[in-house]
Each structure stands twice: as C-alpha cells, then as structure tokens.
Image 1 (cartoon, rainbow, N blue to C red):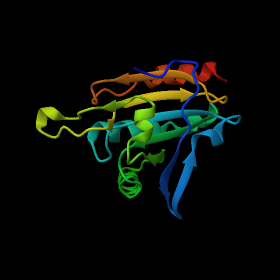
Image 2: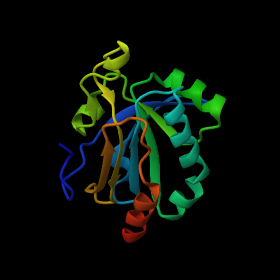
Image 3: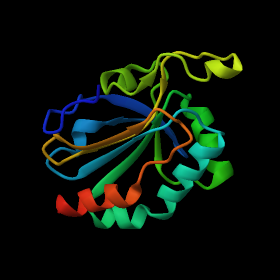
Image 4: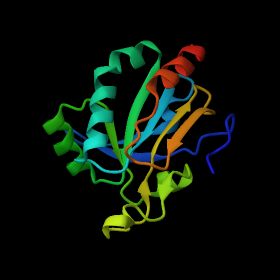
Length: 164
C-alpha cells in the first residue's frame, strides 16, 4: 500500500557515484528548499528503465524550473549506475538502494521480480514516482505492477506546477 498523501516522507541517505567519487545524498537536505521527485526503477541496463531515465534526463531543465530535485533510485550499486548513466547519457542523479531499505520504506518493492522467467528476485523496486514537497510531505504517488509501464510524466509535471 502506498504511503498516504500528506504524510511525512521517510528520510534516507543513499550513495551516488559522481566524477569525483562516491557521494551521499540525504532527502531531508532538500526540505525547506525544493520539492523532490523520487523515481524508483527496477534495474539499470534494461530497456524500459533506460527509456524512462533518458526521457527524464532530457526534461531536467523543466524540473529544475519547477524547483524540483530529481533522483532515480534502484537497487543497483553506484558503480553500475554510473556505468549505465555514462553509456546512455543519463544525467538524473542516480541513488543506490543496494539493500532495498528505501524501496521497502516507501512500499514499492516486488516480493518476486520476474518469476515468470525463473528469476524471482526479491526486493527489486517497482517503477514508482513520489513527489515530496519542500516540507517533506508526500504530495503525489504513482506506481504500476507492470515494470514495462512508464509513469505518466504529464501528471507528474502538472502536480509539480501546482506546488509552485
């Protein structure tokens, strides 16, 4: 069940890999400053995740204009995320939730991902979107059980515009 709209977003600190080395990003550092768009996705180097993150990368100026920080979150390690981002031209800040703690806190995990092809990996993040406002409150949520379905970013943008 998604976290209720208007509730306090669970805080977290996750690593990212930048050119200078690993860095830690804390959600609450944005509170009082900017809205935050959390984009949970299953796995780097997969077709739909690449399509989604490349599309969001091309819209980063729009999100910045809406006073929104954007983070892509997956269970991949930060070095794999960095390699994928370089290969695909992804400029979204990617955060590594390697132990799936944040995805579980936001209740967006598959208990068994891809069991139909014999993988059945537990804890993989669903493709989900949360908007957390400047006060740290959840203002929007969207997810789909089908990992091949990309969120409706027109709805995301409309909600961010309302939060201006």
